[in-house]
Image (cartoon, rainbow, N blue to C red):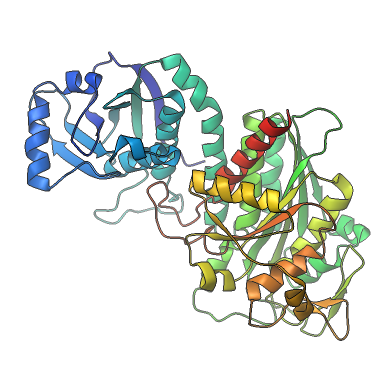
Length: 500
């Protein structure tokens, strides 16, 4: 895991180090502890703010080298805007903005966690620490040389000065495990496909055993025995054999229904016989972003000892066009017994998910099931890269995901399902076909998946625009975003609170 930033806590009375970070509102007001730490440097801040038109807007920064009146080599002022308007997710942003102002020379940093009204609450401090780590992440392990002016991964020792060190540490403990999960998901998405193929992906998922997760890896023989003809139809065109991985965290009461998460894990997608264009095909190494999220989520749940029973399942394949690849016109039999006519071999992710969803629904009978998949380009046409498309057969689950998405910043937008769309995937020769044509492509893909969840409360998240190559944010400058880990960890936490 590439995470070279160390974040810890010290008391407000600690002496600031080489880089000092403080927070102010839109009136350039500081808290009492911050004013004391700044001393005469407060006048320097006012002059620099006027010269740089810094007005303390939320997420804005003011960087002052060698400020007069304090021993710090640099003073970084982060604006928080109107304190009455600050949302929970803003503290994560403030941490990310802080890390964005640091560089490889910023080895010793002190952050005073105080607003004008007083000390930040422990959960807010934990969010700042999390934001620093998330923004600092960088995937550069395959670079042997750096270009002039190119920064490597941030390596810094960050001390956050707080009112109550013990309370801050207690709040950070679970949050740090979630950050670890996000970084694991980013690592998996960023890896090149010659390194991360299905067998290797399964091996990495199996490392969760160290945290007490039960991990079962189904090889080709086992999947044939189960009748996973849809998944195996995709996998048969590659020299790399497919795998299905079932991860179980049993943190709840024995016998309690689990919650379940299913991820599409196409480690590389050429489109198969319906081959994609060459332009940007290299991005298809990220077509396993849903599976990466599920592994990161299961890590977070196990590491923080979540009091819930959870199942994480991922279908891992490569979609390649060799002489054994499935063809348009082929008919495969899914594990459910339903037959599928292959119209386009590039509509492969839904085939992988179909068997895994059915297996999880029937074997584990989960309370609810959420799948994540970089499934369709159509969802990016509809929503761009700001929201993931959400499809669900359960209003309560959909409402919870929408609410939590707005709180965490990993937003979802509910899209329609309906019998009119379902008719578009009816087939003349089989029970269904794997694509319903150009119109409503993300919807017909979701309709296809719905045929394999039976009556289980279910939500499908199409993360094609958010799991990889999404625009850089205050907390992510990585190609692989780790989208979904924070969203679903919060969903599990709220589920536990609602049912305990």
